[in-house]
Length: 341
Length: 262
Image 1: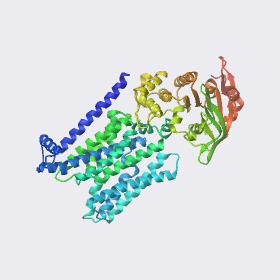
Image 2: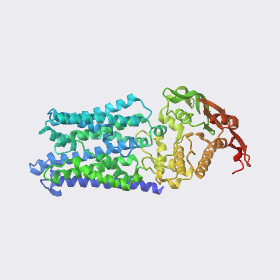
Image 3: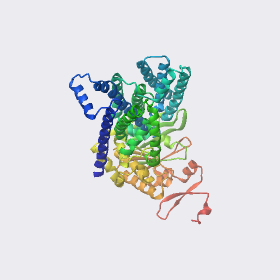
Image 4: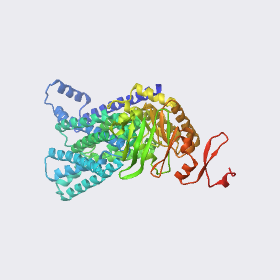
């Protein structure tokens, strides 16, 4: 059918354009900064690096030690949050769900601020954040399984709210106990999200973890989409609901916890970007997933560029995503009721 | 093909009905009747393996449901739920493609053959022109037909329909019933539930009436849909009247005085 081929072609075109937008955003972010460089200079430095010619030029150091790792981290974190959001929205059949629905952000936040309170090194703070996020979702999942309800999804969400609220209380407790001159600003800054402290080594850890989460989501893309019809219908269509749901929760938790542990809590991306993706490619999860990854990556790369170049101080990312995300979301609500009704 | 043997249904410790024995084969239409809350939906869900049996067993081609995988069940039984508005805006074709899931490898998405099957199913039901419409924006009857198309795309010999005509207006109801009849003639086995005994009489080869926690009647439409059974089951006195075309319809036995007013 001609129309069918057209729909296919349209989503292929959209994904190609989004890929180009992402690459352009990365290039722009690499060029901009306190030590400006032209596109040609950046390309030259990359060619030098790839050909193995070591040149002790300041640009090379800035590019490969500071700027590029940060841009790549922004890309990975943005893509991670957006795909986790798209997955949870499909899984919970609710377009208003964000990646922290099962308490992963609150848990990771609690782990990280605890690390700051204890005066641990950065790497340990990140590890505690990661572990906190995973542990929280594990508790939520175990709790939901133990409660054995007919409505497994509802129990999951409620357990997520309860455990997330506990972790939030833990964060507040740590804030009260923290040294108000040293630790409290660090905690606040972390909770607002930032990529200022990213090092090349961070990217080498984040990249494999995010990929490890994205691969199962990409492989199971069709079955995950069928889950959006509800448990009974998905089962009757031949989907092993409990298995697929478990995989989605594990994968989305892995990538969210990874993102939050290096960047702090960055809201809005996981909520808004999947909506923008649906506007472009329709509601099918197998199309929303790649579109969300590309758009989330490009979005955070651009936001982070603003965060580090717009003012003399670093602007917290969570602040910028809220300022941009809230009006975008209102606009989506106003024009896109058809998206979910 | 699908058989319930001394089946007890319900949720958790609460039994809704016990000792249910029934069966459906290809080319048959088994119609399920019963008052609200008698357990029609629970029986459906149990026969689809969505709710565990509290006693007895459900056999699919002589094998207990409990030992089959979801995909094995889905290749034999297709479920047509009541059409509802969905959270996400899927096109009619996308929804019908989801019917192909049980035939796909675990990591696959629908390919060309699946698209052909989906389009053939839409075409069978006369709604191919809706393929690219937003399913949520079609009429209730079209959405119901879309779900029937999805069940056809599933390539299962047995269709289980949960009140396929509930909440449809007269035109849509007749449209859906006409398609159900055509499917029976094509050799599908069909189980459907309804609140309308006249509908059952018209379509069913066999009728099962669930009431008072058990199978109150089971057999051919004429032996089961009697005035006595219906009066007892629904708690309202009814009698059967013959229309000019010879069909029998259920009317209230209390309202004799209404007979002349319409």
